[in-house]
Amino acid sequence: MEAEIIKIGYYTAHEPSYMRTARSQKRTGNILMEKIGIIDLGSNSARLVIVEMFGDGHFMVVDELKESVRLGQDMDRDGFLKPQRVAETIKTLKMFRRLADASGVERIIAVATAAVRRAKNQRSFLDEIQATCGIRVSVLSEEEEATLVYRGVINSMEVPRGIILEIGGGSTKIIYYNRRCIINYANLPFGAVTLTDLFKDDGLKPEEQTDRIEQFFTEQFKKIDWLTEVEPDTQMIGVGGSFRNLYKINRIIRKYPLNIVHNYQFTVEDFDAVYEMVRVLDVEKRKRIRGLSPARADIMPAALAIIKAFTSYLNVESFTVGGCGLREGIMFNEALPITVERPISDVLSYSLSTLVRYYGCDEKHVEHVVHLSIQLFKQLRVLHKFPRIYLKVLKIAASLHDCGTRIRYYSNPLHARYMILSSGIYGATHKEIVLAAFVAGCHKKEELSPQEWARFKDIVTDEDLDVVKKLGVLLRIAECLDRSGLGMVTGINCDVLGDSVIMKTELAGDATLEISQAMEAGGEFKRNFKKNLEIL
Picture 1 (cartoon, one colour):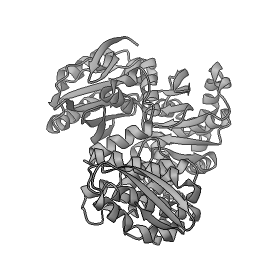
Picture 2 (cartoon, one colour):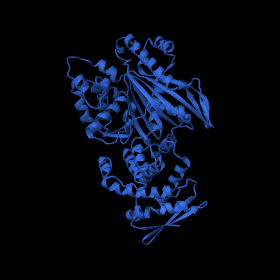
Picture 3 (cartoon, one colour):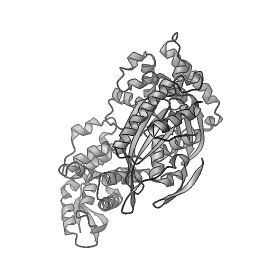
Picture 4 (cartoon, one colour):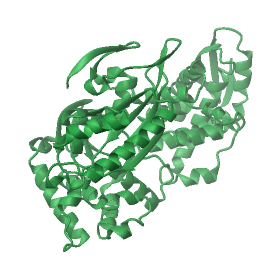
C-alpha cells in the first residue's frame, strides 16, 4: 500500500493514499478537534457516517445515512456501471453532501469498493461525482479494502486469532490473522448482489437457487490453498450488512434482550434455522420477515448461502458477528494513526477511555475508582474467590459508574446501567457488558430489580447474581473512598481477621469524608461477605 509519513499529536505513522486530503482541524488546548464524514460506496449500498474526533486518539459516530443504490447490479453483462445506477448514486451522494455540510463536517473521506474497482467506466463515473457533488472518491485496491476491514475488527475485538468473512454486494473477502497480524487474505469477485443476478432463474425454486450458490462457492473455496491451513479452533467473525441483518432476525426469534450486534455469538445450529426459513420464501414473503431490511430481501438468500458454504467447508460450529469493518478501519486510522502500523494493544481500555470522554466523566476520579476497585478485588479474593475474568467486569463498571449523571444525578446508577447496556463496548462479551451494567446499577443504595435481572436470563445465570452483588459492594466502597475526587485515599491494605475485614487506608490528606462514606456500606458488605467491615 503506497504511503507517506504524517505526524498527529504524539503519533507518527504511514498515511494511506485515501487519507491524503486537506486537514482543517480545530485546536482545543493541545487536542485536535474535528468532525469528518466517511462515505463508503459499495456495490449494494452507499453509506455516510459522520464522526466526531474529540481529540487524543478518540472518536464517536454521531450520525449516519444509508441508501440502497445497487451500483453493482447487472454489471456482469458488460462490465459497465448502468446509467440508472449511476444517476441514483449521484442523487444519493448529493444528499450525503447536504447532510454533511449541514452537520458542520470539515472533511469527507470517500472510498469505493468492488463495483467501481471493476467498472470499465470508472473514470467518467468518478469525474461526474467530483463535478456534481464536489466529492473526490478513492477506489480501494483489494489489499487496501481487506486491510481496512481487518483493522476495524482487530481494534474492536479481543480475538487473537480469527478468520473474517466479509460479504459485500460485489465481492466476498476472507481474511485470516493470528497474533494480531494478517496471515493471508482472499478476495472473491462475487457478492450478494452479483450472485443474485448470476443465479437468477425463474424455473428454479428459491431453495434450489441457494443450493447452486452453495456449490459454486464451495468450489471457489477449494481454489484458496491456505484455507486448509486454518487452525481448527480459529474464531470465525462475520462482517457486513448481511451479518447485521442475520443478527436482527435471530435476536427477534430468540427474544434476545441485548440490542448490541457487535460480539453477538451465533451457533451454526441457530444460523441453519434462519437460513432454512429464509431461503424457501419468495421475495415478497421475505420482506415481511421481522428484522430483515426490505431493501435486502432479494439478495439475502445469496448472502446466507455464502455463509452456509463457508461454515460447512471449515467445519465451523459457531461464529461471532462483528459490528466494525471497513468504515471503522478508516476511523481508527484517522483518530489514531499508529493503528496503520500496529493494532491497539488493549481494546477494552481504549473503548472505556473513549466512553469516559464522550460522557464527560471526571477522568481523574474514574481512574482512581478503577484503581481502588482493582485493589479491593485482589486483596479480598480469599473471600469472594472469583476468577480473574470478573476483574474485567469490575473494571467496566468502575470506569462507567458515573456516566448516568449525564442523564440525571438522581438515580444515577440506574441510568448508568441503561447506558452501559446500550454502549456497545469494544473488547467485552455480551455477558461481561450485562454483568458490568448491573454492578454499576447497584453500586449505591439502589436495590437490584429481580424483574430486570430476569430479562437477561439467556445471558446470565443465577450464580452470576452473587457476583453482581459482591462486585457492587466493592465498587461502592471504592467510589466512596474518592468521594471528594481529590485522591485522598491513595491505597488500601486489607486484612481478614476472624469475622472482620480491616481496611487500612494510605492517605494523602484528610480523608474523614471518604472513610465515613465508605463505612455506610458496612451493612451491605456484611450481608454479602458475612464479615464486619472496619476502615482505618
